[in-house]
Length: 189
Image (cartoon, rainbow, N blue to C red):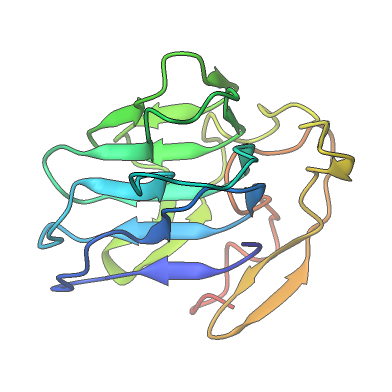
């Protein structure tokens, strides 16, 4: 799952924003994932939750995403107990209240958590970064997983496209790379 916008915005009653109930090698890279306060389930990304899973692989890579949880509590990455391989959760913005991961062995690093203002216009679902926020230049090269590069090469562009993602200096945390010329546009692209 690469470079998507998965949102309930205001008033959605969906359950999970991403549901991968049977596991398998899964790459969740460069997505904007938003859950409204009215969501029926506190978990945003659900992985390997189906009982009796027969999938022999359980590698999960969650890299450079922007998660926005508008519920009062929840879980950003819910991983079923059958998962034996540690998930990689790196370079993500985890905005709002909630548990980062339910897997104790998950590799969780270079993420930004909390609810301090950091987005251009969160009220209108524009989650590009403001200048000077802690996510800028704070990421690390995500490496590779299962022989595939985990480095994001694109970013979501509203309403239904992706555009190239350029990195100046260290990679930014989250789904968007901060670019000064984009900050002044009236609407997000």
